[in-house]
Image 1 (tube, rainbow, N blue to C red):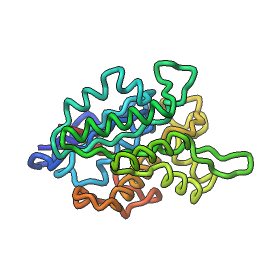
Image 2 (spheres, rainbow, N blue to C red):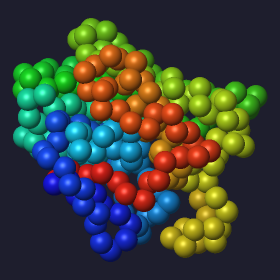
Image 3 (cartoon, rainbow, N blue to C red):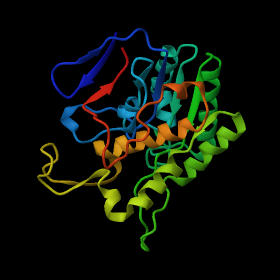
Image 4 (cartoon, one colour):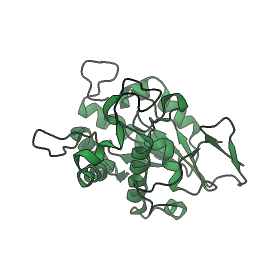
Length: 262
């Protein structure tokens, strides 16, 4: 039996057998799960289950806001994920948004150390007969003075690509995909994906917000779709459980139910 959580008081239950596998997510606020008190803030990991058969794949979203690869490991969150990892499971690894914070020694992770930590994560997943999926950090919405969208954080994304090449790990280049999405939508259109709105639009944010990093629900659904589309191209056996890939941001799937671990 698989439980699905909703933003209402009662859960929805699907009659399913044990899931085929679990996808664990190690990441930061861009992928984290949020409750109703933060709505419409939504992490892409929170809605990734929309693109998988919920009776076959369980999403274990362990992303934590504000974490870098260093702090996620040093605070014990990575070890807890490893403890939950079973053979044939998957681990999505996406960091980079907080690793470059030089003013915070608990989070700052220089590029060389970042690569070492990602390599360690890949190896620790493999030794447990599971699959690591290195994911480049989803891009912030940063248009330069000439109106050109610039990838951000580009340096950590390139480092993640390096680690994938060096280790042979699966790579999901979410940064490249998200940059293309924002460019296609344009400066105005892409703003609708993010926590950007005037005051008194959302009850939990009466002063409004101008956040070019974190997503509204619509944006999270789109980024999750990009991740799923990239994954589909990998040819991995788990892709047979993908679902709903054809949906788009203009008409996104129903996200009132969000798959979680049982």
